[in-house]
Image 1 (tube, rainbow, N blue to C red):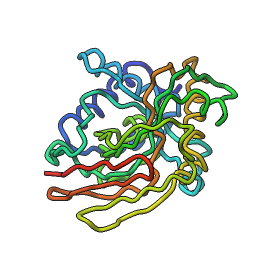
Image 2 (cartoon, helix red, strand yellow; image 1 turned 180 degrees about the vertical axis):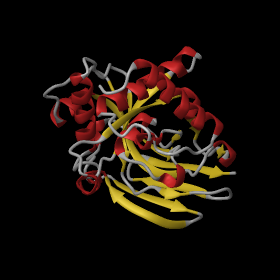
Image 3 (spheres, rainbow, N blue to C red; image 1 turned 60 degrees about the vertical axis):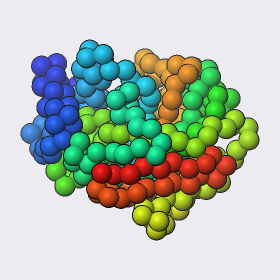
Image 4 (tube, helix red, strand yellow; image 1 turned 30 degrees about the vertical axis):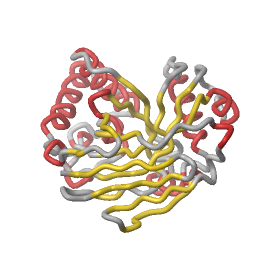
Length: 262
Protein backbone atom coordinates (compact mmCIF):
# COMPACT_ATOMS: atom_id res chain seq x y z
CA UNK A 1 0.00 0.00 0.00
CA UNK A 2 1.09 3.55 -0.77
CA UNK A 3 -1.55 5.47 1.20
CA UNK A 4 -1.93 5.74 4.97
CA UNK A 5 -5.24 5.04 6.71
CA UNK A 6 -6.07 8.71 7.18
CA UNK A 7 -5.77 9.32 3.43
CA UNK A 8 -7.83 6.22 2.64
CA UNK A 9 -10.58 7.41 5.00
CA UNK A 10 -10.46 10.93 3.51
CA UNK A 11 -10.81 9.62 -0.05
CA UNK A 12 -13.63 7.27 0.96
CA UNK A 13 -15.55 10.19 2.45
CA UNK A 14 -14.80 12.29 -0.65
CA UNK A 15 -16.11 9.69 -3.10
CA UNK A 16 -19.12 8.60 -1.06
CA UNK A 17 -20.20 12.19 -0.50
CA UNK A 18 -20.01 12.74 -4.26
CA UNK A 19 -22.26 9.71 -4.75
CA UNK A 20 -24.81 10.74 -2.11
CA UNK A 21 -24.91 14.36 -3.29
CA UNK A 22 -24.93 13.39 -7.00
CA UNK A 23 -22.04 15.65 -7.95
CA UNK A 24 -19.02 14.80 -10.04
CA UNK A 25 -15.35 14.96 -9.02
CA UNK A 26 -12.01 14.52 -10.73
CA UNK A 27 -10.40 11.09 -10.67
CA UNK A 28 -8.44 10.59 -7.46
CA UNK A 29 -5.26 9.37 -9.15
CA UNK A 30 -4.74 12.95 -10.38
CA UNK A 31 -3.77 13.81 -6.79
CA UNK A 32 -2.49 10.36 -5.79
CA UNK A 33 -0.75 8.97 -8.90
CA UNK A 34 1.23 6.40 -6.93
CA UNK A 35 -1.74 4.69 -5.27
CA UNK A 36 -1.84 0.95 -5.94
CA UNK A 37 -4.56 -1.69 -6.31
CA UNK A 38 -4.49 -2.46 -2.59
CA UNK A 39 -5.13 1.22 -1.87
CA UNK A 40 -8.03 1.26 -4.34
CA UNK A 41 -9.78 -1.69 -2.71
CA UNK A 42 -9.02 -0.30 0.75
CA UNK A 43 -10.86 2.91 -0.19
CA UNK A 44 -13.79 0.82 -1.49
CA UNK A 45 -13.81 -1.16 1.78
CA UNK A 46 -13.87 2.09 3.74
CA UNK A 47 -16.89 3.25 1.72
CA UNK A 48 -18.66 -0.02 2.54
CA UNK A 49 -17.84 0.39 6.24
CA UNK A 50 -19.24 3.94 6.17
CA UNK A 51 -22.51 2.68 4.71
CA UNK A 52 -22.80 -0.25 7.11
CA UNK A 53 -22.08 2.03 10.08
CA UNK A 54 -25.19 4.01 9.08
CA UNK A 55 -27.26 0.81 9.09
CA UNK A 56 -27.27 0.21 5.35
CA UNK A 57 -26.85 -3.44 4.43
CA UNK A 58 -24.48 -4.85 1.84
CA UNK A 59 -26.79 -7.11 -0.17
CA UNK A 60 -24.58 -8.35 -2.99
CA UNK A 61 -21.30 -8.35 -4.87
CA UNK A 62 -20.64 -7.24 -8.43
CA UNK A 63 -18.09 -7.72 -11.18
CA UNK A 64 -17.16 -5.11 -13.75
CA UNK A 65 -14.91 -4.97 -16.79
CA UNK A 66 -15.88 -8.55 -17.68
CA UNK A 67 -15.26 -8.37 -21.43
CA UNK A 68 -11.99 -9.85 -22.72
CA UNK A 69 -11.81 -7.16 -25.37
CA UNK A 70 -12.27 -4.39 -22.80
CA UNK A 71 -9.66 -5.91 -20.47
CA UNK A 72 -7.15 -6.04 -23.33
CA UNK A 73 -7.97 -2.46 -24.26
CA UNK A 74 -7.41 -1.31 -20.66
CA UNK A 75 -4.27 -3.41 -20.18
CA UNK A 76 -5.56 -5.53 -17.29
CA UNK A 77 -5.86 -9.27 -16.79
CA UNK A 78 -8.92 -9.57 -14.56
CA UNK A 79 -12.22 -7.80 -13.89
CA UNK A 80 -12.78 -5.32 -11.11
CA UNK A 81 -15.12 -5.99 -8.20
CA UNK A 82 -17.47 -4.04 -5.97
CA UNK A 83 -20.60 -4.33 -3.86
CA UNK A 84 -24.23 -3.18 -3.83
CA UNK A 85 -26.19 -1.88 -0.84
CA UNK A 86 -29.85 -2.27 0.03
CA UNK A 87 -30.75 1.36 -0.73
CA UNK A 88 -29.53 0.92 -4.31
CA UNK A 89 -32.27 -1.63 -5.10
CA UNK A 90 -35.38 -0.61 -7.04
CA UNK A 91 -38.42 -2.71 -7.88
CA UNK A 92 -39.08 -4.02 -11.36
CA UNK A 93 -41.18 -1.51 -13.29
CA UNK A 94 -40.40 1.34 -10.89
CA UNK A 95 -39.45 4.96 -11.52
CA UNK A 96 -35.82 5.95 -11.01
CA UNK A 97 -35.06 9.54 -10.13
CA UNK A 98 -32.50 11.13 -12.44
CA UNK A 99 -31.97 13.94 -9.89
CA UNK A 100 -30.31 11.40 -7.57
CA UNK A 101 -27.74 10.47 -10.22
CA UNK A 102 -24.98 12.18 -12.21
CA UNK A 103 -24.72 10.57 -15.67
CA UNK A 104 -26.40 7.14 -15.43
CA UNK A 105 -26.04 4.28 -17.87
CA UNK A 106 -27.80 0.91 -17.90
CA UNK A 107 -26.40 -2.51 -18.62
CA UNK A 108 -28.03 -5.94 -18.60
CA UNK A 109 -26.63 -8.53 -16.21
CA UNK A 110 -27.06 -12.24 -15.52
CA UNK A 111 -27.03 -12.69 -11.76
CA UNK A 112 -26.66 -15.70 -9.48
CA UNK A 113 -27.30 -16.58 -5.86
CA UNK A 114 -25.01 -19.11 -4.22
CA UNK A 115 -26.02 -22.08 -2.06
CA UNK A 116 -22.50 -22.94 -0.92
CA UNK A 117 -19.43 -20.83 -0.09
CA UNK A 118 -16.75 -20.21 -2.69
CA UNK A 119 -13.14 -19.44 -1.91
CA UNK A 120 -9.96 -19.04 -3.88
CA UNK A 121 -7.29 -19.54 -4.91
CA UNK A 122 -8.06 -22.17 -7.50
CA UNK A 123 -11.80 -21.52 -7.83
CA UNK A 124 -13.00 -22.39 -11.35
CA UNK A 125 -16.18 -22.45 -13.41
CA UNK A 126 -17.05 -26.00 -12.36
CA UNK A 127 -16.92 -25.18 -8.66
CA UNK A 128 -19.01 -22.08 -9.26
CA UNK A 129 -21.68 -23.97 -11.20
CA UNK A 130 -21.94 -26.50 -8.37
CA UNK A 131 -22.36 -23.69 -5.85
CA UNK A 132 -25.10 -21.73 -7.70
CA UNK A 133 -28.55 -21.97 -6.16
CA UNK A 134 -30.44 -20.10 -8.89
CA UNK A 135 -30.08 -17.54 -11.68
CA UNK A 136 -32.05 -14.34 -12.16
CA UNK A 137 -31.93 -11.28 -14.43
CA UNK A 138 -31.15 -7.72 -13.42
CA UNK A 139 -30.30 -4.33 -14.84
CA UNK A 140 -27.52 -2.33 -13.25
CA UNK A 141 -27.58 1.45 -13.39
CA UNK A 142 -23.94 2.51 -13.21
CA UNK A 143 -23.10 6.11 -12.38
CA UNK A 144 -19.43 6.95 -12.07
CA UNK A 145 -18.77 9.86 -9.78
CA UNK A 146 -15.95 11.03 -12.07
CA UNK A 147 -16.48 14.01 -14.34
CA UNK A 148 -17.46 13.10 -17.90
CA UNK A 149 -17.02 9.39 -17.08
CA UNK A 150 -13.23 9.91 -17.29
CA UNK A 151 -11.30 7.66 -14.94
CA UNK A 152 -8.60 5.04 -14.69
CA UNK A 153 -9.18 1.60 -13.21
CA UNK A 154 -7.76 2.28 -9.76
CA UNK A 155 -10.01 5.31 -9.46
CA UNK A 156 -13.08 3.31 -10.50
CA UNK A 157 -12.29 0.49 -8.04
CA UNK A 158 -12.05 3.06 -5.26
CA UNK A 159 -15.41 4.47 -6.42
CA UNK A 160 -16.99 1.02 -5.89
CA UNK A 161 -16.97 0.30 -9.64
CA UNK A 162 -19.62 2.98 -10.33
CA UNK A 163 -22.31 1.14 -8.32
CA UNK A 164 -25.48 3.18 -8.08
CA UNK A 165 -28.82 1.38 -8.58
CA UNK A 166 -29.99 -2.05 -9.67
CA UNK A 167 -33.33 -3.61 -10.61
CA UNK A 168 -34.08 -7.32 -10.31
CA UNK A 169 -37.01 -8.66 -12.30
CA UNK A 170 -38.09 -11.59 -14.42
CA UNK A 171 -38.08 -14.96 -12.70
CA UNK A 172 -35.45 -17.14 -11.11
CA UNK A 173 -34.43 -20.45 -12.66
CA UNK A 174 -32.30 -23.39 -11.58
CA UNK A 175 -28.89 -23.20 -13.18
CA UNK A 176 -29.31 -26.77 -14.52
CA UNK A 177 -32.19 -25.53 -16.70
CA UNK A 178 -30.07 -22.94 -18.51
CA UNK A 179 -27.04 -22.63 -20.74
CA UNK A 180 -25.53 -19.44 -19.37
CA UNK A 181 -23.15 -19.11 -22.32
CA UNK A 182 -25.87 -18.92 -24.96
CA UNK A 183 -28.57 -17.22 -22.89
CA UNK A 184 -29.77 -14.33 -25.07
CA UNK A 185 -30.42 -10.76 -23.91
CA UNK A 186 -32.07 -7.84 -25.74
CA UNK A 187 -31.95 -4.31 -24.29
CA UNK A 188 -34.58 -1.82 -25.50
CA UNK A 189 -34.79 1.92 -24.85
CA UNK A 190 -38.10 3.60 -25.67
CA UNK A 191 -39.10 0.58 -27.73
CA UNK A 192 -35.94 0.59 -29.84
CA UNK A 193 -33.41 -2.25 -29.63
CA UNK A 194 -30.12 -0.78 -28.41
CA UNK A 195 -28.06 -3.91 -27.73
CA UNK A 196 -28.21 -7.69 -28.08
CA UNK A 197 -25.83 -10.19 -26.53
CA UNK A 198 -25.46 -13.62 -24.97
CA UNK A 199 -24.01 -14.76 -21.67
CA UNK A 200 -20.70 -15.67 -23.28
CA UNK A 201 -20.01 -11.93 -23.58
CA UNK A 202 -19.05 -12.16 -19.90
CA UNK A 203 -15.60 -13.78 -19.94
CA UNK A 204 -16.85 -16.61 -22.14
CA UNK A 205 -19.16 -17.77 -19.30
CA UNK A 206 -20.77 -15.70 -16.51
CA UNK A 207 -19.56 -18.25 -13.93
CA UNK A 208 -15.99 -17.29 -14.86
CA UNK A 209 -16.62 -13.82 -13.37
CA UNK A 210 -17.75 -15.44 -10.12
CA UNK A 211 -14.65 -17.67 -10.05
CA UNK A 212 -12.42 -14.62 -10.54
CA UNK A 213 -14.30 -12.84 -7.75
CA UNK A 214 -13.73 -15.82 -5.42
CA UNK A 215 -10.04 -15.88 -6.29
CA UNK A 216 -9.77 -12.13 -5.77
CA UNK A 217 -11.37 -12.40 -2.33
CA UNK A 218 -9.30 -15.46 -1.48
CA UNK A 219 -6.13 -13.45 -2.06
CA UNK A 220 -7.46 -11.03 0.56
CA UNK A 221 -8.35 -13.77 3.05
CA UNK A 222 -12.08 -13.59 2.30
CA UNK A 223 -14.69 -15.82 0.63
CA UNK A 224 -18.08 -15.64 -1.07
CA UNK A 225 -20.54 -16.90 1.58
CA UNK A 226 -23.48 -19.16 0.80
CA UNK A 227 -26.56 -17.12 -0.06
CA UNK A 228 -24.64 -14.33 -1.81
CA UNK A 229 -26.28 -12.37 -4.63
CA UNK A 230 -23.71 -11.74 -7.37
CA UNK A 231 -24.00 -9.53 -10.45
CA UNK A 232 -21.65 -11.13 -12.98
CA UNK A 233 -21.04 -8.05 -15.14
CA UNK A 234 -22.59 -6.35 -18.13
CA UNK A 235 -23.70 -8.65 -20.94
CA UNK A 236 -24.42 -5.58 -23.07
CA UNK A 237 -22.56 -2.33 -23.38
CA UNK A 238 -23.63 0.47 -21.05
CA UNK A 239 -26.41 2.61 -22.58
CA UNK A 240 -26.85 6.26 -21.42
CA UNK A 241 -30.28 7.21 -20.08
CA UNK A 242 -32.06 10.44 -19.22
CA UNK A 243 -35.40 11.55 -17.81
CA UNK A 244 -38.29 10.18 -19.87
CA UNK A 245 -36.49 7.03 -21.01
CA UNK A 246 -38.16 3.64 -20.66
CA UNK A 247 -35.87 0.62 -20.43
CA UNK A 248 -36.96 -2.98 -21.00
CA UNK A 249 -34.47 -5.85 -21.06
CA UNK A 250 -35.68 -9.24 -22.27
CA UNK A 251 -33.82 -12.38 -21.17
CA UNK A 252 -34.17 -15.78 -22.78
CA UNK A 253 -35.86 -18.13 -20.27
CA UNK A 254 -35.72 -15.52 -17.49
CA UNK A 255 -38.41 -12.98 -18.41
CA UNK A 256 -37.85 -9.23 -18.51
CA UNK A 257 -36.76 -6.30 -16.36
CA UNK A 258 -38.09 -2.77 -16.85
CA UNK A 259 -37.85 0.73 -15.38
CA UNK A 260 -38.60 4.34 -16.24
CA UNK A 261 -36.28 7.26 -15.62
CA UNK A 262 -38.01 10.41 -14.37
